Image (cartoon, rainbow, N blue to C red; front, side):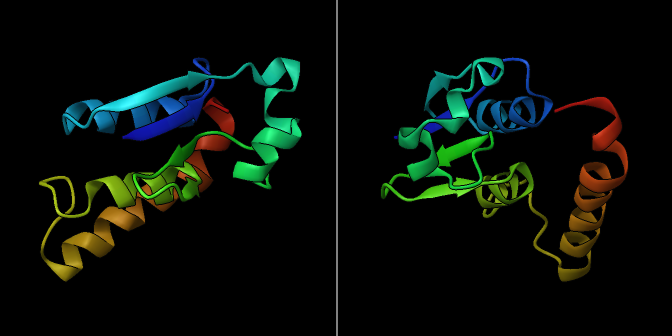
Amino acid sequence: MLRLYDDPISGNGYKVRLVLTQLGMPFEYVALDITKGATRTPAFLAKNPNGRIPTLRLEDGAYLAESGAILWYLAEGSALAPADRRARAQTLQWMFFEQYSHEPYVAV
């Protein structure tokens, strides 16, 4: 089962929770308090050396970080990821725009 490490206040984590829910994918939620250093512990840094959330534990036990990468991983093969090459690129275009042009001003 997928396991999501996240802080309930995280906008980036919210995006991942939203996609998991929209796709009906079961997942375990592990709430971390970033204000108390929960992502800086040796145990968490072993999962994600950057010490950031969201971090997703995959079915095979590997870890994936960065919300955009997680969203793309989850969407692949679903209706959320277009089959057409240009449409996929346009989806990524908007994901990158949101993350690097908009996100820094509105959420953590």
